[in-house]
Amino acid sequence: MNYLVKKAFAELFPEKEIDFDARIKYSKAFKGYNAKVKYTRNFMEFRLSHSWKEVSDEIQIGLLQSLFNKIYNKNIKTINIELYDIFLKKVPLLTPKTKTDPVLEQSFNRVNKEYFNEMISQPNLVFGGNNFHTLGTYDYGTDTIRISELLKKNEQLMDYVMYHEMLHKKHKYKSTGKRTIHHSRLFRQEERKFRDPEIEDKLKNFLKKEKFKERFWFL
Ligand SMILES: [Zn+2]
Image (cartoon, rainbow, N blue to C red):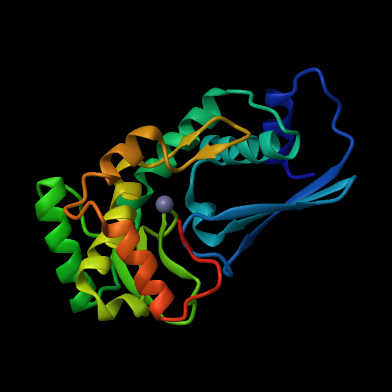
């Protein structure tokens, strides 16, 4: 049994016996600070990205505890979980910015100027060429905004999706243990401030025209 797992569990559930075996696997397959857990009734494997190796035990315990909260469907708060949440929100500062693209950079700069007083620091910016079902995503673990190449055809729509992803970078998320809220009321309120009030309809029409019939979303 890994001692971090043991400690995380004992401090989260002081009254519970550990009735499973567990290990931590640091994996190069994950980027940034991503992590997940695979489990059966009596065995858990925590897979953490390689970067976690360098992170202090206290914060790793917070990560493990928040994964335990998910597994057991609980919402217990601990100091370690608090530390972990603070750490995650600072990840963008720790993440090297190595990827960019001139078209995306222009869109980022336009939106940053118009809506954020240029206060958002530039994340990694990439076109997500091969996933046609996702218009945009923001990944906290690598501080990366990914925009669908489809939007190269329409600057206005690109700015809108860029704006949405930048709002994620600004607002972060609220986690209540069981649930993570990415699109808070405040987020939606600010999203509606986009320069063109008909942008959602325009986006839908554009996607229809592009025969983008399958489900689409942005994260
Ligand atoms: Zn979103």
